[in-house]
Length: 149
Length: 190
Length: 292
Image (cartoon, rainbow over all chains, first blue to last red; front, side):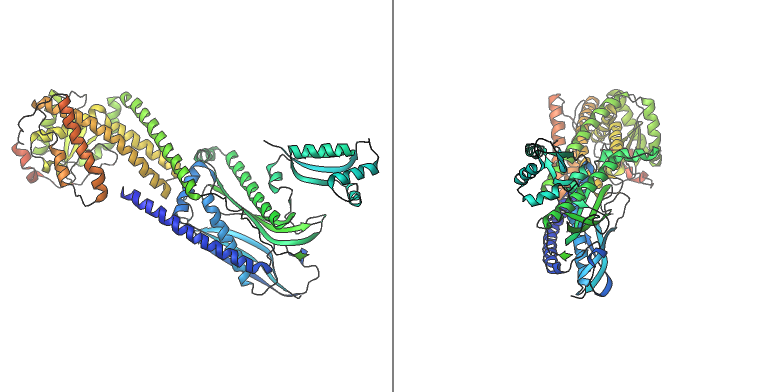
């Protein structure tokens, strides 16, 4: 009985706090993406550099670690019994990667373009063999180029 | 399930009408200038429509026949064909045979899918004897297709018609689930 | 090549829809699944238990010998309990078992029926006894568990559920732990039916042995009073349960037209139970469900 009450409290707290956090984070991400729109990040590099004069080239990277809330974790556990899209983790990964890309752009200062961008994901805090991870780390890296206009 | 077709024109005529008349008819059908019709008959297959359903395909077929030309309907059986929805995907710097005129930055597609517990149990039993895990192969395929589909959707919203230098990446947040991430650069090619 | 700065309007990477709805749907599915397993399991156990022979049970009982061995063996109170049980069995409860009674030094007010015909009475329970009728009811209740072979049922269900939970959720997942608690709640309902049947058996044995059913509910009345009402969870679950058990015993007695009479006091050797107690390891019953 007591355990059930504790569980319900954890779920409720996880859900409300998690949702508020996520909304706030998405708002911040969208605003910053708009601001950084002038600095494109692309996965190729040669094709864009046909006759530009490159003043500076430097490796830049950004990373973000996002933790999962209790509600999402529980929902993912349930989803694994029935199969299908694990929706609760999708936004988690989406946020982590977009945040990492934004931080990479922030690290690039006033470069014109970031080329050959690569994005990797890893997990931290995985205790048991069949346990779901409690947080996810995304890292984005690429070469920032300053081009003479 | 509804079929999806790619409509391709290879310059073939039914033989009932002379070439000039066919060109004029087609220009009316496709609402293009007669000058643009020369491109259609330039001895290379031209994609008229990338993803058309049964009804649309039949309509085009009838219209072309009336105009005196033969259009080819290529059924897209693989889900990945449809997933990309006619978007050209490459994992090299460019689209070989075309020029990139415009780019829109990064686009990405992300998915996490799990199979139900019964599959997991069967998989752990299969570990005893080895062999292909059909359930998981299917799971990975579905996930990859969905990731590509989502990436293509993002690119379409930006006005791109190709994604170059596509990379796939995985993560392992939920154990026993397939997590696929596809990203590339959305471009417009000509 | 020129760059056109644009952002997608819709984020395709997050499946739309309400997570709360998903949670409710999945939770409903899981509860349905558990209910299904519970029903199938009940049918399976009911099918299998009458088919387990006494020899097989004795072999299973071998695994519990650790519990029975550590309990004290030769003291006057054990001898008294054994005699009382033998008399009850001989006169009013014909069972194919050779029932052995042991006392365990444990403050819990509990008695346990183990496979192979062993009853373990906790000393905490003995200290609370005031009449022989009351004690006879507790022993008859345990005999009732043997009569219905509840100890085997509980063990069978426990084992299967443990294996299933490990298979479904893994051995160390938090989701699994919580869901096993839900399974535990359904188990509680199952054991409630068992206890009711054992109570009925107990009161009929007491009535047959003494000629009346007085004293049968004394034990429950006592726990009801001693129960600490400050722990709210306990208060809500246990009290109506005890009340209901008392009411059920009385109703059952009325239905069977059992009479009431005088209580028989406990004999000397059981009265001085504290003097003869020997300190030993406390056995922890792990799989056994039937209580008092």
